[in-house]
Image 1 (tube, rainbow, N blue to C red):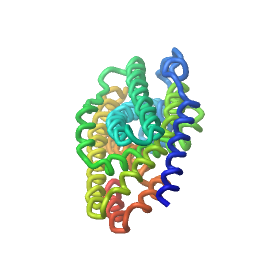
Image 2 (cartoon, rainbow, N blue to C red; image 1 turned 30 degrees about the vertical axis):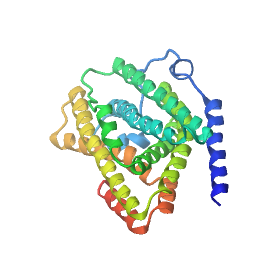
Image 3 (cartoon, one colour; image 1 turned 180 degrees about the vertical axis):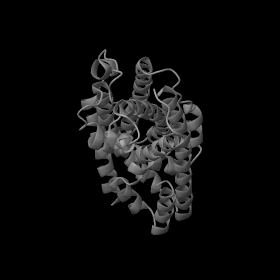
Image 4 (cartoon, one colour; image 1 turned 60 degrees about the vertical axis):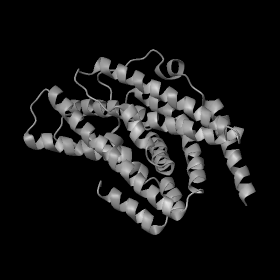
Length: 310
């Protein structure tokens, strides 16, 4: 059984290499293609931004809020890919004198994550050209990566799988089908999605490999660390929701009431919790994998932590 499983896993690593070669893309030639953003474009669709629920805003204000959220969306992904790439490089060391197919798949994964980081830096610069000064995203990606990597590999891979899966969900359900959003922003996440679909497979393979080496007590500790990471992500989201609400208010052409300012911050946080935590935690495949690896009490602990964010 172990030999058969190893062969099956080897086939999946090889398939990821083949797909990586087939869908390989270039930032300038395939994605940006000399384009810029338009100040009237929607950056993030309503299915993710939730702007339709901001019923106290006018139509043009909702567009601006979608741009703020889209800019933050790109920056959050650039942040996450810093620690994801560091962990992938670490995991590749487990295969350096062993399965060379797995090693190549992970090296390609790392190379693509570095490319994604560059892409999101470019997108931030392009967004800054058409948006007012004063936007703030002051999270130090190296500090965040160091904190995340201080947790167990199991916890980091659980968080990574969750992220890779929700990127696919977001693209397929909201970004791909939106008729009016920025063509450039859509292409950013089209090409990002193409490579992330392979990364999710590799995440799961490595997650299951690491899990198979754990005892029950170790796994119980890992679950606690995964919850710690989710709570830390939520802390970042709370701070960014405050930043983005303040930026919107500073650039809104009318004065919002105190009630609407408070509602703006609350609804931004709700949107961010959906985008970066709950949409992934409720992803059917993520739940399937976790249920296969965890006991009912462990799943209940995770569900309880997530319920507080709902």
